[in-house]
Image 1 (spheres, rainbow, N blue to C red):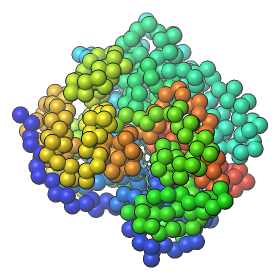
Image 2: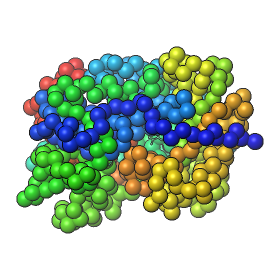
Image 3: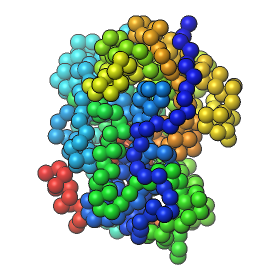
Length: 546
Ligand SMILES: Cc1cc2nc3c(=O)[nH]c(=O)nc-3n(C[C@H](O)[C@H](O)[C@H](O)COP(=O)(O)OP(=O)(O)OC[C@H]3O[C@@H](n4cnc5c(N)ncnc54)[C@H](O)[C@@H]3O)c2cc1C
């Protein structure tokens, strides 16, 4: 028997960042308007603010942060899109940029050295922090695969070098991109064109080793036969030195960035849905808000994702004129997900909760086969179930929520399962929707009880999110988990860059670079660099990166 969900209070969360939008609170003129306050939008806003721009960030949700927001309910607190972030343990580029944006106000708690655990069928493997430890641990399991493992590590370094070229290409001014872009793109390693499976199956014929190397595929949203090797390599390197958790919860990131934006006279407005980007004589002239109010501005930066920007925020005739209707056919929205947010009586220590994420692969090492079967029959076995224990990772949790703890479960879920309720209202979608959610939630809880049996009977509250929740709170039309899919085709799209073909309109966030907090933050920096230009940006980058 699973513990039934206690009746939830629909009181909104108190973990809020930003000011509620009202036209009377606008204090323009602004130098730039940013649509969406995910980490990408906030990064661009903070960097431009640092250069003296007055920026208004317009966020449709009740709080800023996008996928980095946290929420509270029934005395518990959960993050939505942050379970662990890599590269936060030393003076890496990501850490330096994060510290600059947050003025060093966010502390990072290391997870266990064995930060990810993969349950592949009846076998268990760990991801271990540190390059030498990573190699030794793999060799212990696969002693005959030393050459494959070493070559894999070399390829990770090759992709990292390629990413510098890739990023440079994406931030070049229009004239330079025309001249130098093709040359730069020719210099990218061949792995940029290939799937993870294509690359790894040349290194080894052992499917179990490939499964262990790609055990984090949920972090990029695609299994090895579909994902770009570039993304596989970026995730592998990102977590090579372990996982870290923001002390106080993910929402602390946005909260700590906000003062930078305000210091330059800018603001982050919540409940501020943008309906349309307005153009005059082919150039951006401002935005129309959902309440009909027009805010004038010649620079608009969209963190709402490429699909939203070109299908919802611009007149279709303009989109066609610039060829974006055809370009959008080359990319796909990523899959949706189910989330189970669990509150338990008892501290993480009492309950023995680990600082390790669990990745459960009930179908064994054929990840692509498992997802194919699940897409055909979404009521069949889950291809992957991810368990995360945020209260165990956060050293401040017990002080803030004495005697309590939290667990989150994530599993992929196609949007189509829930599409029929897309027109209904959040919180009132009907009994059949609630029953479907309940049944998915109960199945996912059984995976938790299987791996962490001591929590059975200790669950005080749980609730389930679906792709419709992602659609409602983060604005993704098909509830996509990570914006655009990270397949090889996506990395060939040189139009996925900050500068759009529409004068005054820019993109930022995960679709410009890659998903992940660090990926979207780097997208935010690339966008600020492209907008401000090297003369203004280079000195600031010297301050950030030394
Ligand atoms: C379940 C889940 C787990 C994840 N786990 C991790 C993890 O452990 N580690 C990690 O590094 N990454 C993780 N990620 C990925 C990471 O959170 C995202 O890649 C990143 O935060 C995306 O940032 P972004 O700025 O591009 O977009 P988002 O955070 O998606 O922000 C876009 C914002 O635009 C707003 N918006 C959209 N349309 C409009 C409009 N018309 N008007 C106004 N506002 C609008 C949305 O409301 C939203 O706030 C996870 C994501 C999810 C969903």
